[in-house]
Length: 157
Length: 245
Image: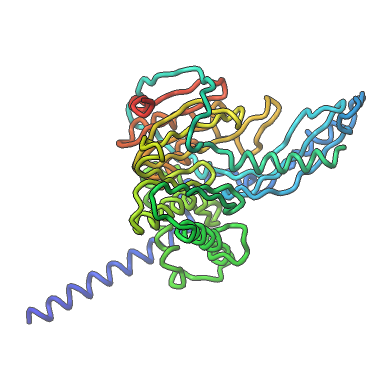
């Protein structure tokens, strides 16, 4: 008898687990938070206003400088996502760099800070000696950025 | 022995100072990184993540590693008040977590082989164990987000993880069309934690929070942070200076 009771309890737990799993599964498409994201951010934003404006400016191309116009850089892999930039050249100079693709860290806008507001120390950043074993930085994306920009600028020559 | 490789399009460095380390030991870690990249890359069409996003794989087909990453992501979402979320418009993108996870697991491979003094890094996310060749704590530089060739802070670490999440700047004309919700004032945040997996996921979430992010780290037990704002001022958590000397 005790055995049957145990089996019933175990089966009951399983049934509850399966039920919750299904409930959870069904809710999946309605992830709170991700709905708040700008849907446009999943698509490259080419900002046509900004790039087309560059064509109308009187140009004064200097020696060795770039030709006026908008140039599309290659898509570069930055692990968190792709990076692609568009360089805008006016008067032979880079006047704008527009991100067409950018890895987005900002998944939701759900953050609510209910915790205490601590007073934290602030300082001006200052260059240090480069005598280190290794460096931590967000350079993965900056390298991809540089590669995409270099490609855009090579077309502007 | 120090070796470099390009993993997922990013520089990776492994440095093991214990005697007896072989090239094979280090290559094993690099192979693991390539395996992870193949599985979790969102822009490799044949990766497991891409197959899930195309609806080709159902939950019961997921690999154990995928299930683990999904669980960790769910956990991180809760711990960051929903700020960290790998579900983005119905698309699964665990990249914000996978790099730190990979570096941590890569370091575990070396630990299980019995090594004590080493670091494992992919693009600025580092797991640091033991001491450097001078028998001192490893010296880790925090990169200047305004000049990547420059270091603006040096921390001394042993048996810790450090990760930086950030944006980059090249003058005031650059803007990010997706940054509508970003706090525009933050250039980057470096987080130190008990391991690189922890440091990376909280650095990612804290960066997305804007200036509030440093308070989030301050309130997180066992973590310290260094946030660099676009006005070239940095904000330190209260225990950060312990790592300076």
